[in-house]
Length: 292
Image (cartoon, rainbow, N blue to C red):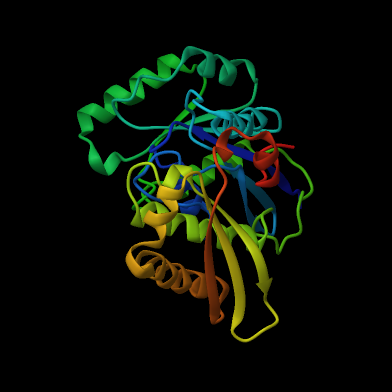
């Protein structure tokens, strides 16, 4: 029996549902999902295995015009997705026609199959959906067009079947029991960052980086020390809150989700530190895993 395997790279702007889609395709929560833009900062691979195929989905940061070095590094992850893709999932939504021509040109000249995934069909009308399908049929010639609702998992099976028809024959790239290329520490830090995104407003979430300083998985409960880095003392004060109430609330929410994720009780210690303007600091960006 032949075996299929390949890289399916998910590309789109912020807030079109890329992370929701990858989680739906995998049946696992690997990527942060919030209503805030720019929540995905890294390129995260999720691996879907069966006896005769392996699909490596790759969720990239939402495509934006960089305003500082962190965002430049985020966009470098998007660029890397063009180099190893076997199939592109280009995610959009009805009514959105604001993608740059340079991006659409890259998808065309890459000479790889493109599936235009029109997400959020649960939030639109049939007429608007038909307009969107017609638009993308003319915009990216020879692309497959599949309307879905990632949130409600509508047409996800059809999308998977289409991917499998386009997937090349190949032995698996990863072990068949592997779900992702990221470490457990990475996902614990992402859970904490997700709670920060949900709990705090304005500039705080975009000025934050979370690093796992200690992870004692062999202990019961598991002991985790996490450092939350911000850029200003005022941001540290907001994260801590009055008499530490904000950081306590954050810790309770994060601990609950981490325990569900790893299946063990944990002790979570959160510390807040200031590194001024770390988003423009090459050394810190490299330390945080944004630059090679």
